[in-house]
Image (cartoon, rainbow, N blue to C red; front, side, top):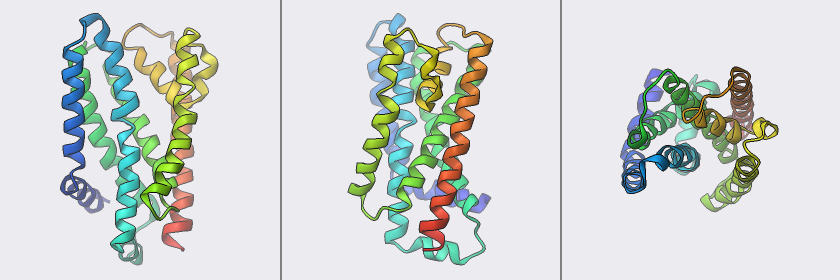
Length: 227
């Protein structure tokens, strides 16, 4: 597992994923520094959710398709490599990038307090959930256009509910969706959330993470290992 994780990190570095993240992060930080201080926190959190954690979904599709084209998957799964190790290696390596860049995007609005560790854990869980969801989608497709077509449909289902959630004063009915539960927890960095709401957010976020993992595992076994 450790060797596989190191390999994925090196591959992502060589393919320029870290560079792309740094470029986007530099742009976001520049934008954040140019807006009023009282608006930085909200904009920072929205950028972290909408872009920093979401980029991993795009990258996982590119990685899987690259491994298919270069016949890397065949050589990987000929070995005793277990599918769950493959999934967690991709998830952890891409989530690591998301966490590092999210911290940089958060710096212009940084207020370190007891809530900050929960905020970072939320970012990690959200990024990991979306990476596993993207891995499940990418397992079956053969072209990047097919992947983006599927991704756009799923993204619309996840992102559009954020609009009524914000317009309806963060109504708890929307918390069942992973993107909304994640944003709700992130916004807790701005104003304290009641304990029950934090617990509900965490439960929904962990439940979606588990479902995303099971979905990715089933798809990897069906379309990458046993095809």
